[in-house]
Amino acid sequence: MSYHILIYGTCNENMKPIAPFKRFCAPSKDHEFIGIKFDRIDGLYDRHNYDPDVLTISSAIPSQTIIDLWQQTYPGIEGKYYCLIQNTHVSHIASAKVMYGYWLDIDNLADDDGIDDILWLETKDNKMLCISDHNQSINTPKAFFYGQILADLPSNDKINGYKELAVKFMSMYRKPEFASRVNLTTELCERLKIIDPKLLVLSEEPELTVICTSCHCCT
Image 1 (tube, one colour):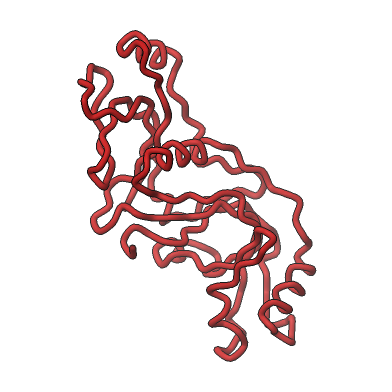
Image 2 (cartoon, one colour):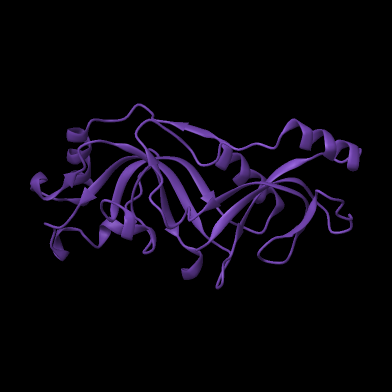
C-alpha cells in the first residue's frame, strides 16, 4: 500500500544531513531533500477518506522547536513543506480529487442508457462525475461519485508540485453551497440523456471525500 510523507526542509542535493534532519529522495530519484518527516498518511488512494462537513487530510505540523532548530542548523536556508508519495512499486504517479457530493447507484442502468459516458462526464461548473480507482472502490459505498471538485491532488516530479501537494494535504476543506439531491438527479439525467430519473439513485446525504482518479499501480 502506498503512503505519503510530509517533510519540512529543502530540496538540495549538495547539503549534508545533520541530525535530526535526514535525506529523503523523491520516488522518481530526480530530487533529493534534506529535512524531517512530521506526518505519514497511509492509503490515501486506497481507503475511503470522508467527512460530512470538514475534511483535512493532515492536521500535523512540525513543532516550533524543529523550525527553530532548522534555522540554527541551516542558517539562511528557508524551510519549506513537501509531500512525497512512498512505497510505490510500479509508478510514483497518482492522482485524486477532494470532492463534495453524492455517491451514485447505477445498477439499474443498462449499457445503452449512458453508462459508458458516465466515466467521462466532466462539467464546466467545476462538477464532475467519476469512478473511484479499483483499489479504493472496494471500500466505498458505490463506485461512482458526482460532486464539486474542491482540489486536485496530483503527484509529479516538479519541485513546485511537491510543495503545492503539501499545502493541499494540510488545507481544511469545508462543504460548499451545493444543489439539492433532487436538482442534481435532474441535472444528471439531462446530461446523460436518461429519460427515467428513477434509474439514477443518489446517496441520501452528501459528503466530503477523496476520490482516487489514477492509482500508482495503473499509470
